[in-house]
Image (cartoon, rainbow, N blue to C red; front, side, top):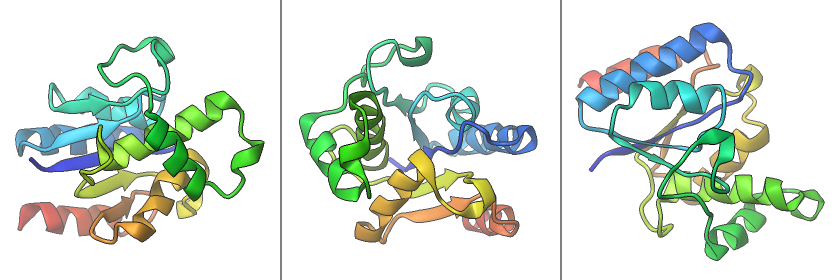
Length: 164
């Protein structure tokens, strides 16, 4: 099964959100499974196009009014998240759970099944905030391709990868 993480900033521009939904529709037709986190903005845009081929990892039950079989990050994910976050001690318990759910988005329910790629949007292509946490993980998983839609040539690169 091919999986991808569809993530990004809550402030993703509307034109990019539309691209994300179209990408998710296309990947769904190809049999790819979306992993995302239920946040407003990018996560919802990917989820809108993914159909039933999705795993939505929530930081807690009812996050953003959503239901999912994956609604609590594991203790292992919390520990893992702490190792990737540059200022973990300053994070509230809620923010820690948000970052821990990113570990599941990237590595699956048991943290042993990396996604094939991450498609995201980060402000200015700078890979910051919550999306940055997921992207920092890729330093230890170099097989995960990252496509940041804030970088102008990304759509063409992604198109070539998927069409071959």
